[in-house]
Length: 377
Image (tube, rainbow, N blue to C red; front, side):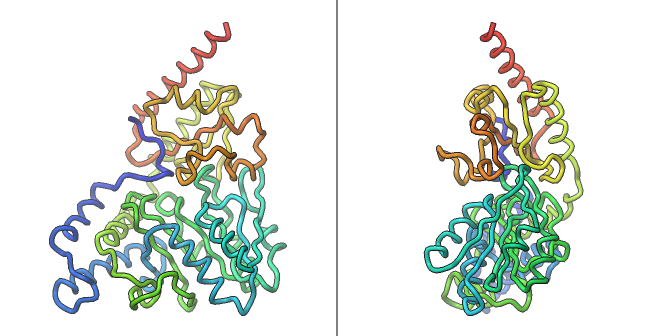
């Protein structure tokens, strides 16, 4: 198999697995224990917290470890809704958010909250002016993803943050797809909350992090003992915390390595040469993640492309809603023509992708063209 579905999940980097191993085999202490085993575990968790904080350019105590991006998103949305209810009941998001944002918003909508779902342009971009128009005196939170998991389009987060700050509204970004791929420093983005999913940046599944700006207190999603400075109950997942910390350290060292970007751009140029005007890139042509191509194969069904690439792991959208028979909400929001919806394939490359693998994929797609030409004759 050739793996081109890195936006769905990434393999655990070998160096990440290596640093986790001692905490599986020997350093198994509870970080809350006062003896040597606990002290070692506590130190490992705090080192990992520093590594995550360094990648984002924030203070370590502003980082909260979670079970993943979904928990981080739920913690912010439900926490703000509860803690700031006296100020208002209005939350703003976009039509193209991950279900881990949309579903909590819909839950709150059923419980007396007002949710505004901002549309996007044909590139899948949110317009900051639409956010500004939607803010009211009752708005308590704006939540807009940093980069879309399907199209890879990067949202104008820093511009939106200026608006939110001016209006006195808290701002959250789901950065699950962007952290580790593009710069995601909080001082540049200007957000109050930022969500991370470990398995999107070569750490294990089941670990994530949430940045909460110093001075902001929200109700915890999980109640219990006073772990994570009282912000999330439950004995710390030392093994996975260590893994995420090292993955962030690794991402920081590789952030300006353009290998994946160059390979993705070459792949797209070759696809253009091969298919000409029979392909279309969905999403922003430039302002998108460096590893993502969301392609419409005009005249070919996505099933036909899947069949031609039977040994290649690809996606027609997000893995979180694979198997769904309805149109992708992202494609619908972008106004994709109905006849084009069933032609879309997402390729997402990663650190382990090779030029040879891309060449094999291109050869298989060339065979698809030749077969369809033979059939038409």
